[in-house]
Every structure is written in C-alpha cells, then in structure tokens.
Image 1 (tube, rainbow, N blue to C red):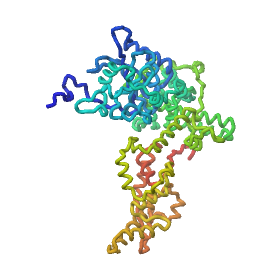
Image 2 (cartoon, one colour):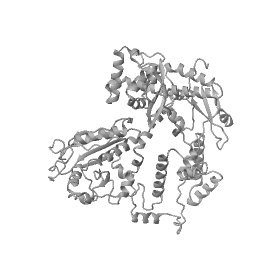
Image 3 (cartoon, one colour):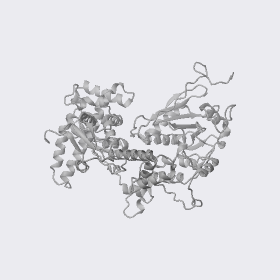
Length: 629
C-alpha cells in the first residue's frame, strides 16, 4: 500500500479540491518573501494600502465592467505564510485584466520583497502572450505557478528548482503553490529565468498604459429622468451594472416594462427629463448603443414625437435637422440606460455588488425625503462638472477598406488611407497578423502550435498521393478560401454530380472505378437517387453559397404558389416521367414561426436562427403607432 498517497477529504492535510477559475476571471496573489530577522520586510497591510493608493493615482475614475480590483488577506494550509489574494470578473472588457497586470507590476517596483503571481481561466496567460518565444522546456503541462512578477520584471522558476518525485519527471511535473514559494525562498534570484524577449512579449499590452486608462473612457450626453441623473451623479460607476443589466436583459424581468399598464409603478418613469453627460467605458457605450431594442410603452410616445420633429426639421444636411437628430439619439440612449437601471432596481437590495446596494440606499433616501423635492434643480445640474461633454464615437465606425489595408500593413502609408482605429489598435492588429503569418509559415507547428514529431511528418509525406517533388521553394504560403472549390469538393464527397457538365464527368469516373460486372441497373438507381437528393437540397437552398431571402418576384419566377388560402405550395422539379409533385406545408406551421419570430422583439431566438439556416431573412417587426395607421 502506498503510504504517500494524496490526502483525501477528512484528512488533516486535505486542502480542498483545486477549482478552475470561471471564464473571464483573473486571479492575483501577492507574497512578501525575504529574511524576517532584519525587520525590513513590509507587512501585508502596508502592501494593501500601497495598492489602494496606486489604484487611486492611476484609475480613480475608472469604471470596472463587473468587479473592481481588491485585495484580501488569505492563508492556506501547507503554505507557511499569509498572502494577499484577489479575483476580478472582468466580463467582456479584457482591458480590466491588463489594467490589473499593469497595476501589480508598478506595485512590485515599490517593494523589493514583493512577489506577484497573476493567472486567469486560461492559466498562465502572460506566457500565452509570449508563446512564440518561450523555451521548449516550458509547456502548459509544467508552467503552473512558475511565472512571477518581481521588481517590475517577469521571472520564471526553472525546472531544476522543482526536483522530480517518484512518479513524475522534472519536465512533466507542474509546481504546486507551496513548492513554488519554497523555490522562491531557496533559489537565488540570479538562478531564475529572466528573458527580456519573453518579458517584452508578455508585457506588450502594457506599453499603452497609463494613457490607456483615460483613452478607454467615453463621455456621451443622454436624456434621462431627473431622478436617474441624481443617481448617476452620486454613483457614476453604477452605469456599468445598469448597462450590463440591459445588455443581458431577462425577458421575464422585462415583461412589466413592455406592458402598456404596468401593475407596479416604475422607479424611473420618463417624466421630468434632463440631458446630462454620462461617463462610460468604450465597451459599455458600444454595448448600449449597438443594441436594437423596441421602446417600452411609456417611452413610445416620446420617441415617436422626437422622430416626427427630426423628420420635419428640414433638409437632412441642415443645422436644424442635425440638432433634432442629436436630440433623438440622446433620447434613445437615455431610454436604454433608464431601462437598465429599471431592471437593476428590481433586485438592487439583494445584489452582491457594493455599488448596486449603494444605489438601493440612495433610492430609499429619496423616498424618505419626499421624492422629487430632494432632486437637483436645473441650475444645480448645470453646475456639475463635464455636464455637456460629448466625445466623438467615430471609433465605432469600421471602414472595411481601411481594415483590409491594415491587415496588409499598409494603413496610413497608402494614398488616401486614413488608418483603422487609433495607433494602439493598428499596432495590435498588425502584431496579431504578423504572429498568425509566422505560425502559418512555421513548418514545425502542429494543429495546436506544438511541434510535430519528425517520424509522424515522414509518415504523412509517404502516405500523401499526387504530391509534387521540388515544389517546396515555390510553394505559395498565402492562405485563401475558394468557395467554388469548396462547393465542388462537397459535391464530390457526397457523391453528387457537379455543375457545368460535371455530371457526365462524375458518371465517367464512377464507371472507371466500379467493376465491369456490377449491375448497371443498380448504378442507375443510385444515380437517380443522388440527382433527387441534389434537387431537394437545391430547393431548400442548402447548396447556395450566398443564400438570399425569397421575394414575391422570385416565387413567381419559380412557379411557386398556393393551392388554397390555408396552404403554402412548393413545386419540385420534374421527375423522369415528367410529372409534377407538390409538397403541402401546413399554414399553421408558418403562422407559428412568424409569431415566434415576432415574440423575440428583435433579439436572437430559435425562430430567427431556424429561418436564417433556411436562407430566409425577415425584417424586424416594427409596430405601427396610431399616427402611422
């Protein structure tokens, strides 16, 4: 019996199960390691206060997507010392993760005995950034807990610092956290791996900081209720959970808002509207603006009136029309933001987020103070800082011509090239393309980027048929996708006859491969079956490379019609006997599909996905107002 077995639940040394981080989460640990006898080691509380001070200096007004950066003291069995620990869920904004890395790297420069480890759901993501330049002995199987930030540098614990056990080898054994801490205590810093090339690649995204912190913010005026303006002014960071509540809205929670007569009064009714500038991150602003959302009943009249004013303001290029269009856009953004806060207020008191609970407390205080009487006046609102600030949102517009030029590395160098995005976006895009090209040109790279065994490559080369010798030097390394070639290969794989006379060629090929004594009658039946299958697939648009929605004109051209008011009739192609068959489709099925599509309210759903797969694209169901009828 093995006496050195792993501890089990209930044992004294059992430290729990190792849990994988959730998606879009970053975890960070801060250790103070050094000689305690000289009394020069800082306390964990001193490091935590320094981190909070550094955060206030760099990102005081920063809006976190889901969770902020925070540190708590933590202990772990078998580790021997306490440490600072934190986990941040950054959601869709990956810049939150890199801001944390930048903050921790700057903090490590302030304490010579501070060692920082950062990882996310992908593992050692700093090494993933430098995957092209990492040494071969370092792999995802053994890099756990080996990557540390110290004194602003990226240091790696070598394999020699982790001796193999009886069941593992040094090259395959990952380090546990206690083993990594022991290695940092006993291994001289000069023996740790410090590669400037790996460090440059791992910290490449940090070059745009700290200016990126301000660049990532976006200010935009919105028209919202006065009560909401007060909440946003008091808690500006509450815009993040409210935007996410709207972006990830639950149809059940949204149902009372869409009702023309809600059973409970709204927290933020669209009355007493004011226009104020709201601070977003670019991710939050894009999430809010890009959503198509039919206005709730209480907002419908206001938006319709604004649309009428914009339409009757004069020529589209006139100053009056431009002003009215801006007012309409601000009202639409205000409607979406107010809806997000309305959804947020339904469960604000039970929220785990501190800023959301603070919003609930502010709403309670307003109710106790008499409601509207405690709200700010127009004069007070005008005195707020940056109340009229409006940033250009041209960064949301994508010119695909500029995008193609950036992919080719020609951005602003070509005549008339305006560039794609800002300088940072251009650099990131070009770096991504260069890395991808390097991977494609790397003959030793496998499917997942790993090196392919030489013996396996020789076997693959020997099994390949029709390969041409001496063509490696002239091989075109560009990767392209030929739709015609792909369609032809799919037809051949399915045994379907090809186009442009390919039917006779396919038949001749079959005749050459099958034995002469095979029954010709059976071959003829198979051919007819394949033709019938191809005919049906074409009828449903499965073989079309660019399916287009059917219109009334195309239906008349194809001879499609209805046999009776309750039935949709689709004709098939004539068979060998020249007869026409009709397939009846239940009218109720079509009706139910349309009703299901309408109930999606412009959002993704099963009916829209199903119709899309069939090559049919329906317009959004815009309800007509009373004035339009």
